[in-house]
Amino acid sequence: MKNILVPLGLSENSITLNRVEYAINLAKELGGTVYVTQVFKELPRSGSLPTVNKTLKQITASSIEEQLSELDKKGVEVVALPLEGELLEAIPKFNLENAINLIVLGPENGGIKDPYFLGETSGSLVKKTEIPILIVPENYRFAPINKVLMAIKSGSIKKKNALAPIKEILTTFGAQMKLLQVKTTDFLPGDSEIQKDLETIISSYKSSENATLFQGVLEHLNANHPDLLCVFRRKRGFFAKLWEENTILKRDFESRIPLLILRGSD
Image (cartoon, rainbow, N blue to C red; front, side, top):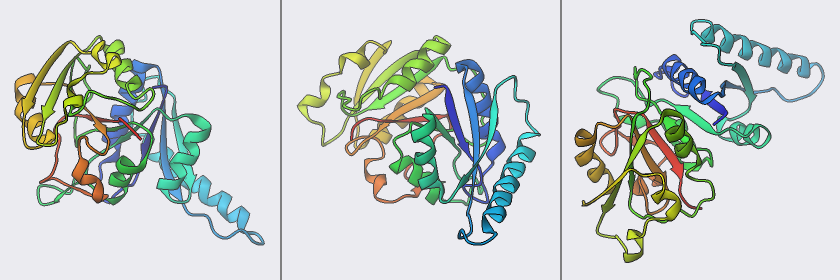
């Protein structure tokens, strides 16, 4: 994961510097670069407007740099990246040319009364992007990743290189990963077969029967005390019913540790 992207300003309540700081620490361990991005909207191109748009880009870059000046970059290359247009369109376009390996997001943090875990834009990124996403809880401080809990329904992973991010994390930190397979009411016989590529990177395996995958995760989080929770985004996987909406409510899901979301199938 050499290129890590952190979007700024996804909501007026979001604490952005916390997740930028986390991304810097992670990039230091992985030997990566952090791109901190904020979008700006260009004016229609006519007459002298290209000059105005150039200025808007420079102003956006300066705004990013000003926020980054408060952080210790720890020798990591941190790039201020102003992007034109809408974030959901600008990130995939930038990714095609620069191969972003991970997007770091934060949850909504409007306090206890805020009902959302993910807002409209961040939820849309989780739902629609091809890029792995790491959601870092509010005020969560970076620490070495020693234990990972991966939660799955099906042991079949069809997406090519889907496991690459977690493999790199496990190798970099010398971490161990426990696989939790939750058997819900729609569990199929073929789901029990664990793909060989996945089987080679797990240190232990446990199965449980629960109404939902999330309930299974909650049941085992306290017992395992992982530093990272890893799940797959797919039609019959984690968040399956949550994909219908872009926003995700805290009553449906909330994580107190970093959550890595991988793309499990097309």
